[in-house]
Image 1 (cartoon, rainbow, N blue to C red):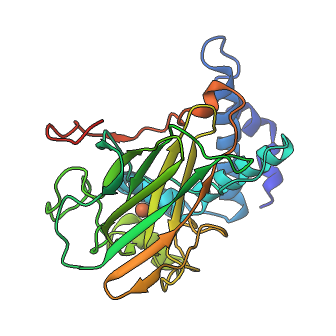
Image 2 (image 1 turned 180 degrees about the vertical axis):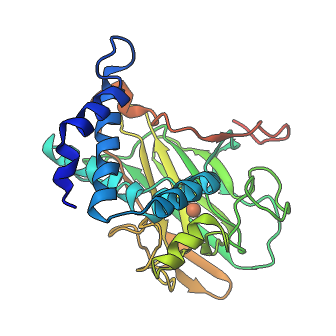
Length: 306
Ligand SMILES: [Fe+2]
């Protein structure tokens, strides 16, 4: 069977009716997207001659794996594709330069303590024993220091678990998570218990998919950032440790050129000097965050807030 089967009047009428194209109510943009999405699924079915059993297996996989969509999306490369698409649109608009954006991942938690100075991110002890020291400057497009920036930083512990998402229950809220308020010089500095890379949950939906594709579900050690500042575009990025075994083979495609600093290691200490460069905002919307749904936790009562 040829995919031209999809173009038969009977199928096209079915698509129109299913997407509500003949109805006056509803959201026109959603109707157009749903019609194309449904047609794409139909084309896939015909192109690969997907059987009824295979189709319902896929539906069951999506239903059972719903809790891991935040990992399946980066694992399939779609989250990185969104970055590449935004980069390409920026280039069309003459917007380029600065620190590359890269995937946010599903593990940010809003409400972390807002702190100043040379910050300790780690509330909890960590048997890993290695310390990470990171510092640098947040600059603008002309190299000017960006004043009044807030650096949101979050990373895993030495076992690869994030606070608020740690199945061992061992971490206190906001361990290895802070918002750092910078001064007029744009300088930031923090230290913390060094994170490890991690894998997707064994036997979970993402792991099953990776295995079926002959891939793995590992990420190199990394540190996530949002950087926001008045007059500048909010940057979503992360640095990945350039000396990690998975630095060049990140299952989530979060590693990018320019975001792979190699830590200087001395004894139990790893040091990274890394400057961020923001683009100027051209409208107020660019100073904010995308409206992606994110976890939120109550601020700590004893938080050292400023
Ligand atoms: Fe992460």
